[in-house]
Length: 156
Length: 176
Image 1 (cartoon, helix red, strand yellow):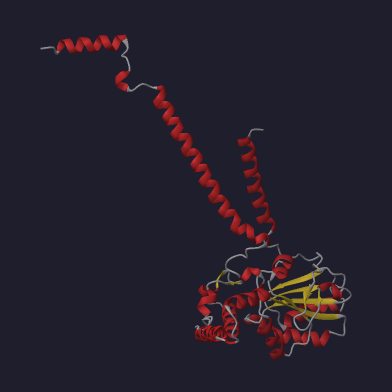
Image 2 (spheres, chains in turn green, yellow):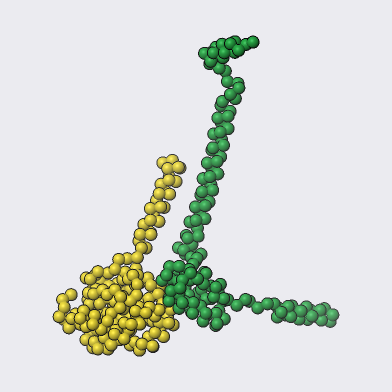
């Protein structure tokens, strides 16, 4: 009996917590218009003052008034204008290449830089190993002779 | 072929492929008189179903590309509607292509101007831009009964333009 009462109390507490949870924030026009394009103007909607952009904003406002979420509004815009209306290409189908190509480019560049650095450091190390330090290099006989003569002139 | 040469070959091939794809996706040039107008199927603006220019193959068709947000389209609409009503019994129709527009706004526009000619919807603008080669709205294309383009008008049409340029084809005075 005690166990049943405890369960009922827990369920009631969970229900009260859920009821008290803040509602999902209402979508706003600025929240949507920087993520969609004005297809005719070729710019982001929030940067366009063209009549067509005003129509698009009015459409978004009507969707917001109908209680649609941002994703639902973007879906409705895609149904009207096609995927070109999205500021970011969809992450599916051929449009996925717009995401993959830059990432692959950055990865390839990083690998190329890493390989280049490794080769450069190895070449520098090989040079160091191959050549004795300057102080240990023997002088050419002619240079040694001239050095001795110069030193002899200043020998006090 | 060494691994390095193969990698360079693949990279060059990828660059050429991307350039080719870009060229192929570039907007097409405008249709020229004598060319066949593409018979791409588009959804009807109002109601279910779809249609195309080819549905009117035995009639003269004035394809009018428009949008509800376009002010010159508002100016030409009464002239187009009047012309359609005056000549629809002579194997002729105006066919509206609502391009780059919101369907709700387009339907309101049609009701506002009492437009009775058929309307297709090109929401993305792909048909108008890539297949007809339009550079804006409005633009009109007079298509002969055999599907070939006869006239192309950039900008709004007027009553005078329709009477002096389109009527001669409908009456058989002008040669295709």
